[in-house]
Image (tube, rainbow, N blue to C red; front, side, top):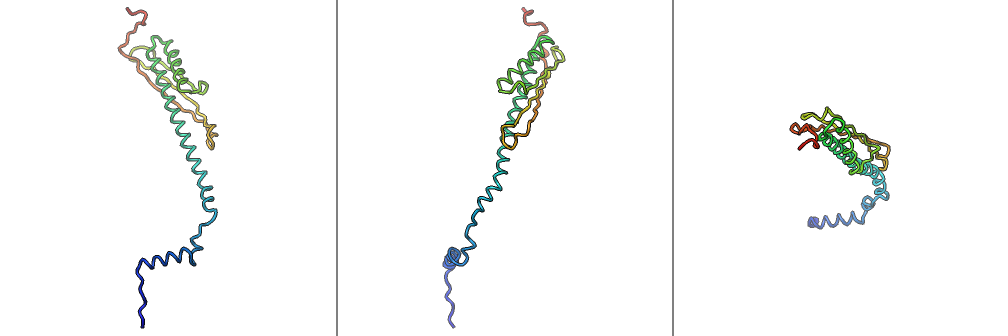
Length: 168
């Protein structure tokens, strides 16, 4: 009886690879036509929603920071005013100036400056709200978001009660 010839292991791998490459198993390895197109068609809407969602979230975050800055500046300007009548006027004027610098639409911005009086140790509160429209973003154009910001600024307890023109 003859013993079968044993080939080294690496040769067996080469033979198996050649059989798979062009032999009877080649029909199983052939790429399926249209599979990539189908996968792209299924994944593309999900990717687009994610991309536009990230852009929308970025725009909302930026607008929220801007609204907070408007409220902070309006409250600060009101806190340094000398009279009760001047608190709201100076605060709103400064708030709308800051909003214009940031490029916010004045029609969509509402700003209210509330004062307990300009007495030392008091507070001035500014509340701002802004409507952000995402109409120019595909897939998110149906939504409009209202962002709010407020800031409470203390009036300096050591400031003079006299107006600047009355000081020596």
